[in-house]
Length: 409
Image 1 (cartoon, one colour):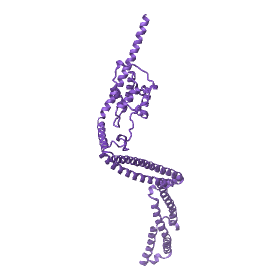
Image 2 (spheres, one colour; image 1 turned 45 degrees about the vertical axis):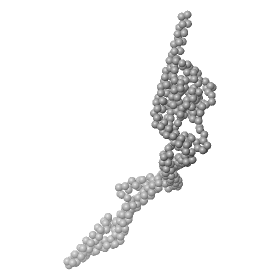
Image 3 (cartoon, helix red, strand yellow; image 1 turned 30 degrees about the horizontal axis):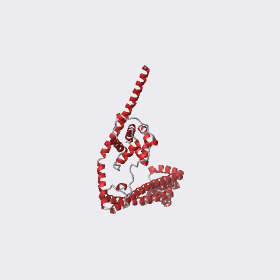
Image 4 (cartoon, helix red, strand yellow; image 1 turned 60 degrees about the horizontal axis):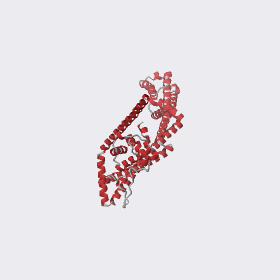
């Protein structure tokens, strides 16, 4: 692979760039820089010296998208490819001398304020700095409030969940209570039906309702009155009269003693029917209650675990909000520090920094040139590889000619 082909130059970059070498080697344009270093080494140049000089001559700013591409372009500008004078060399890591710092840290001047390129927000123009100060301050305050509220809610949710008072446990408990009420009403209805049948069958009168019995009594009494009114007393005397009077007495006694009890049972039936719910769902509700009644402890444990997991998610969300609030607060502190540093800058220093910021903006606008440079560096790598292949072919051809001469002699 391409990264293994130029692995011998990793040490060169480490000696020159120090801790930033890993960034350069991991850049997508590293093969272009590696090929360029291989080319200049074959041309008789020291790759450490060449790379160090390119670092010193290149203006490496945050606007540069690919540092290896820029360095490859700089080296190709200083040492153009010349296959005619190229000669292979072997790289010796022990020949590496003192590393060259690619981006030396500049010290603060007498004002104690480091150069603007060394400050996190030094490249921000004054007008934009003030705007960002206001925006970040507002966002940081709101984020702090959101984080505080979320933390309180997460803490409360965890306490409630662990005490088995969470929403899932509460819903399960309420469901069990509702089913228990319905199941109890269903059982009472069954017992009431048995009692109702027993009361209606007292006296051997069957399952006739109180209204039916009342109508029967009215008919018997009507017969007695009708016959007496028309002077047919002789018709209601004797056995027939006694039977009618006995029947009316039995009906009156039954109605007087049983009707109130049946009315009470009817009222209770209406109450139990409402508590038991729709008749079509009573059987299913009763079966569900039987299952829950057997497995309620396990179901409550599962519900508690669910509530705890939900509380954990809320706490995680609160932590993310706290991190965001902290990042915004840190950004605000940096912006405020930058704003304060500019108020104490000498006028000439302030003007120079503003000019530098303007220059950097112009560089950002020309980043397309850097992309072209990267492409050119990649082309240079391809050319170097082709030259290397040509040299190898030449060496092989020369060796074959020499061998042929020896045989002929």
